[in-house]
Amino acid sequence: QVQLVESGGGLVQPGGSLRLSCVASGSRINIYFMAWYRQTPGKERDLVASINNGVTPNYADSVKGRFTISRDHAKNSVDLQMNSLTPEDTAVYYCNVRGIHIPGPSFDSWGQGTQVTVAL
Image (cartoon, rainbow, N blue to C red):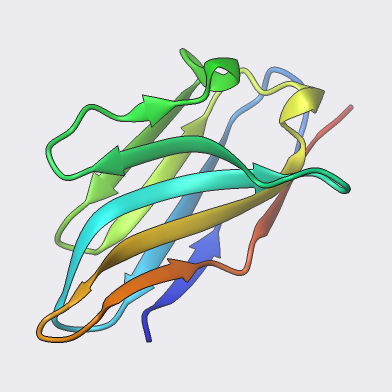
């Protein structure tokens, strides 16, 4: 089982920045997809940003130009740099990592979620 540990959420004023981090634990794994999703009460979990092996990152239209996803292959980690935050970015943010054990089955793991609140 691949465990994910998230960090970096919190309270920030509009226009501010936060950086979320997610580290995947586990040896002998090959990760091919890393992403950040977010969810607000009563709504579905939506994709914010994703990054595949060797592919240009993908962003939701609402965060393009403000958020940047980056991956550290050596550390099995993925970060989300969030700039120019607005109250509409307030949500619980979840890290998602997909890959395969070597040898063994594929996995699709989720982090525990970290709260991001944008308010005065």
